[in-house]
Image (cartoon, rainbow over all chains, first blue to last red; front, top):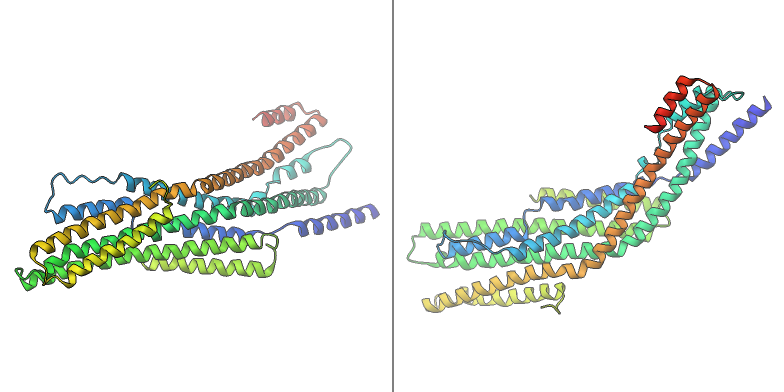
Length: 283
Length: 126
């Protein structure tokens, strides 16, 4: 009777110690998942270097009244798209890695078979009752979690610390290629379109109806290009929020359990969600 | 071009675009004063300049690879290490499963049940 009471006490003590050792990195995982959702908006962007090159080439053919032998050399633009995609994919994969190591599922090991083996096994003179088997099994699972949680926490810390600087570089150049270079090409496109339409709109040999139609076409095209630029801007905001989120993670890597840090990460997650929604609205 | 960074080329493209647009604005504002020939010549020049500017933006985007090369490598290594870690943690489950199988075999041996021993060995080999 006494030994059973001691056993129960020991078991409860072990359980409370182990439960205390377990950590919850759910908020890190959630911010990473939202970051992935945000960065994957790249796939929905309406424009690419190659596409602008093709459109510019078509515009040249239209200006020259030419529809034959209109092949375009867009090789450099294809290269620019590949480079931008590599940066995007590497940044995205980094966050997938962060989700992997901060995910609780990793340490939710299946011990049902072990329970059965212990419960049904006839170990010679040793007989285990079902209640003991379940209790031991719970402790062993929690011990395993405590061990892997400690490992996980260490790995998350290493991952975020080592990844922070290169990630900043990647986000900076991804943003530069999209908001700087791709957006710049769209700005050039606006000027080219104006240069093309201006003479038709000003041409007094054309009827007022024709001139009005040209002016309408001009404004329609400018508004279409502006819409694409707005989407690039919205994506740029997403990238800045992602970078901000990672900065908070990096600055507080030793206090991830802190309530204030959890609150900050949750707020950033909401801001990021808003930025993602804004991009969807601008379509 | 090899000595310029992607950032510098992008800035150059921006400056050149402003200059180019100034030429365009000159034509739009003086359209009535310019001869047809002058208009056409400026229009053509403006177009050619715009083509150069858009090419510069593409060049800047291509040059980015030089700036991100190291970071690309670092991030890729860190991510790969994590994937390996994931595999390692998944292996804990395998070890757990194997330990369970061994335990079942041990129980079968203790009970001297040949049928159980045979099925346990089969499970272990599987």
